[in-house]
Amino acid sequence: MTDTIRAGVIGFGLAGRIFHTAVISATPGLELAAIVQRKGDEAAKAYPHVPIYRSIEELLADASIRLVVVATPSFSHFEVAEQCLRADRDVVVDKPFVLTSEEAAKLIHLARERKRLLTVYQNRRWDGDFKTIEKVLVSGELGRLVTYESHFDRFRPQPRREVWRESGGPGGGTLFDLGSHLIDQALTLFDKPESLFASVRTQRDNGAADDAFDITLFYPRFTAYLRATMIAKAPGARFTLHGTEGSFVKFGLDPQEAALVGGATFATPGFGTEPEAAWGKLYLENAEPENVETEVGDYRGLYANVRDALLGKAKLAVTPEQAWRTTRLIEIARESSSQGRALPVDFSGQP
Image 1 (tube, one colour):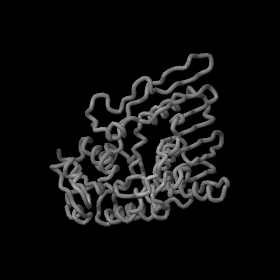
Image 2 (spheres, one colour):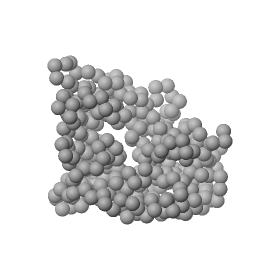
Image 3 (cartoon, helix red, strand yellow):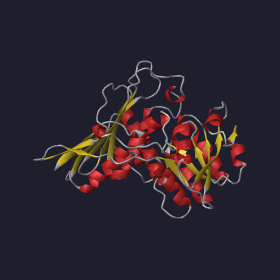
Image 4 (cartoon, rainbow, N blue to C red):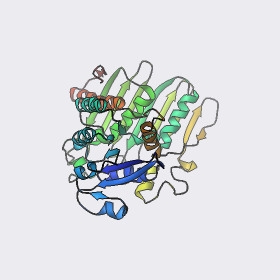
């Protein structure tokens, strides 16, 4: 089809392999046209008919590639995204966007100058559980929301210090990794909080990077709690919402990532669908607890939106300004944790 957008992915680690090449390949209107893998032959084996390059420059030499995905380690996101924007390509950056709000602002200004699309891969807006939360809130069944809790708990008690994300170097740690998702989801639902209190810490023995955080976002009439840890053998609820008319509680993680890692595809029957045993429960006064069917998750929604935005058919769902806000909240969370006090949330520097 003439509207097909050719896309290249830079990086073939977990992000490039599971969250980008697999999703792009399954999204109508997008063509996986190139992959940059500096070493190894995993990409060539997975995609034998896709050109594999050893450098970014080789990819950018192909003028037919319009969309470039930055799926490299977080510490390189700014440099690589800048290079691609200066080559007049539209750019998707894997989360976290970049390491500082200053870097985020520079990329946003550059994208505007070059008139290029710039977005961040916040795929968990297309998690089935998050889509269900949005539906529950819109229904009004909970009444006025009082408490929102969002947990991302894992059990990996032994740190992998040989991996860049856990080595203690720039861009690593759980706050950048999982915090990017939880903060983006909270901002999507509730927009800017008035203030923030955070504890960012390392819980595991011999850990070199932060592996746990608790962030409290204060809104005028309710509070949002965001939490992640790598030491939770019995994970807490993924979402807990309390309102003046009832509560909603949902355990378990969206199944898409595990399915893709396990070799499933978006064409696999039941992909993105949760069994009834994993559905959340709605608790209302004078009523029996009610199972709420989890919406079907589909990461392709993000890339479909990018496609439509490039074709002028839709507004961009994950804007770079939103990504700047998430980056800024991560900065404020670190400041709050180091100072041991709540801090006001100031977005006045947003580009």
